[in-house]
Every structure is written in C-alpha cells, then in structure tokens.
Length: 289
Image 1 (cartoon, rainbow, N blue to C red):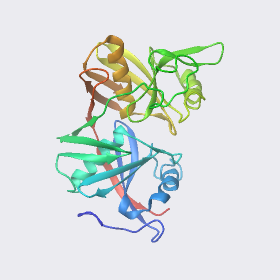
Image 2 (cartoon, rainbow, N blue to C red):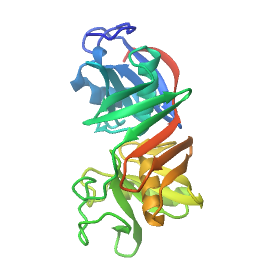
Image 3 (cartoon, rainbow, N blue to C red):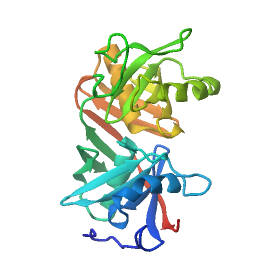
Image 4 (cartoon, rainbow, N blue to C red):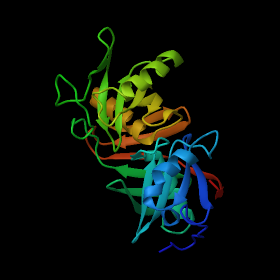
C-alpha cells in the first residue's frame, strides 16, 4: 500500500526512474527514497550507486522510508551497502514523514529493531533513544583483557602506541576518544585502523571528543562504512554519554559537530537518551540510475 500524498514514480526493477529527496542533518547528507518504490534486496546496491559523490547523488548513506501500519519504518544503508542505525537519519525521516502528512508532531519511527519516539517542534526534532551500553556483546567488542567493560580502557595498540577511550553502542557502534581533536594526518591514519581493528568484529565508528567547556564538546568523526563525516547523531550521543560517565554528571551536553550542533540529554549516563537538532530537505529529483 502506498501512503497518502505519495506519488509513485516507478521501481528499480521495473521502470528506470526512482523518486528521491536529498536531506541533511548537521551536515550528514542522504538521498531518501520510499520503500514502496524499491524492493529490500535492491537497497544495498542502490546505496552504493546513489551515495557515490562523483557518479551518483552523493551522501553519507541511503535512507529508505515507508509506512508499516500506523508507523513510519526507516532503513539506512552506508555507502558501502551495509545496513546501520542512524540518529541524523531518524531526524531527516521524521521531517519528511511529517511534511507528507503521514504523521503528526509526536510519533514513533521503527528503525532497525527499535521503536523511536520523535517530537517535532518548529525546525527541530527530538528523538528519544534507549540507553547506551558498554557491554561487549552489545557493542560488539572482543578485547583481550578486561573483556567485560568497554569504558575508559586501551581500545587500540600496535605494540608501541596505545589509544585510550571507550567503546559503546547508542544504537550503532562507536569508540569515543577523549582529548584534543586529531590533526588531519593522525585522523587519516587512525580512523581506518580503528574501524577495521580485529577487536571490533562489526567495525566501529571513531569519535574524537574534546571538552571545550563544562557540558560542551567538539567532535571529529570517522564513521564506519563512510569515512569522515560532518555530523553523527548516534556518535554525538556516545560522546555525550561517555563524557557524563567520566564526570559522574547528568543533564544536557552541547555537541558541536563540524556540520552543526546537537544537544544530548540524559538524567544519568546509563539512562534514556534524547537528541535534539535540526534536519531539512534540500531538493528532490528523479534517479535514472
């Protein structure tokens, strides 16, 4: 069933044209398509083609959105075709679903096994996630020593150098490294080394997080399956939660991504997380790939 206000253009396996919308949140950009227009098994390959910045539309991932009963369902695929959970993608999907009249201003989106409440207030969207987890089975991680805890430990070593940080999940796998942000050389070297390290069986995104002031962080992001990105919602949440755990605090943390700012709130580091930030549609078009 095609949701109301949706105009079907065609499917990848049928007609050659596919309607899309280009959306972004704090610089994290995505082509968005409707699930009614493409079969699920085509989405990984479609993500590779549409997200290519030279021969496609360009994007940090592909969003595929549709209605499942009364709820929008979102799927997100990285540019390498792997499926993932996406905080910024949720806000983009929320804005899109609301603009088309599928939902009101307070609703839930089904996304990768989670039911995420979304609240639209003007030009901002707040999404309410579950709690972060440092448990190795949840992240996942395979640390050789102290395998029960991903918090504040050596997360990578080559025998001569060590990197200390935390590995946790806020819906997607992240390794947060507190301290000064890396320069381009260090970032370009260590980002892929950590992402593909054997202790991260599902790979990991890497978030460098520098405290600029109490409850204010600046981050630089190496995102698994993507590389450097301008913003990451779940990564901002991971950085904020890890910061709150380190200071034994609670409240709202301002997280400054290269592409914009989000505000992450939690009553305690292991409590439910709320992320507030902007999202918008940039343009729409027809994919003829």
